[in-house]
Amino acid sequence: MADCIFCKIIEGEIPSSKVYEDENMYAFRDIEPQAPVHVLIVPKKHITSLDGCSPEDAEILGKVMVKVKEIAEIAGITNGYRLVSNCGEDGFQTVEHIHFHLLGGRPMLWPPG
Ligand code: 5GP
Ligand code: ZN
Image (cartoon, rainbow, N blue to C red; front, side, top):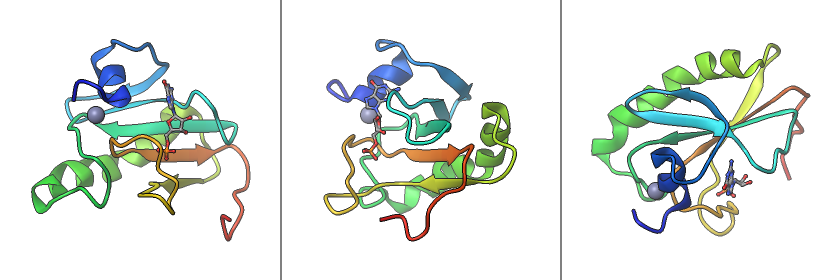
């Protein structure tokens, strides 16, 4: 998608601090970290959100899920983490390319607020 900031990051048109990459996904440090470790895990396919995904996306989204523990380890998380995908207006999604926030390095609050 031409005007998508995460597509541009995946293509290297916008610089980012890479944590992990393979043919399906790209993971990089959030520019405005909300925890000592804050990584964004982004499928390379432009899917808008959890609301915007379809059954054909199940394989790639599954591949992202089973890779999370490895990305957490690479990012230096050693004591657990939280994985979040904000969706839509009430979910406070600001970038319309599906992504998973990997947060760690401190105890997380629950309920999240
Ligand atoms: P959302 O609000 O959609 O759940 O998450 C978008 C995230 O992308 C935010 O945490 C925001 O800080 C991050 N972000 C937005 N623009 C950039 C950027 O250009 N580079 C990086 N590394 N992160 C970004
Ligand atoms: Zn995109």
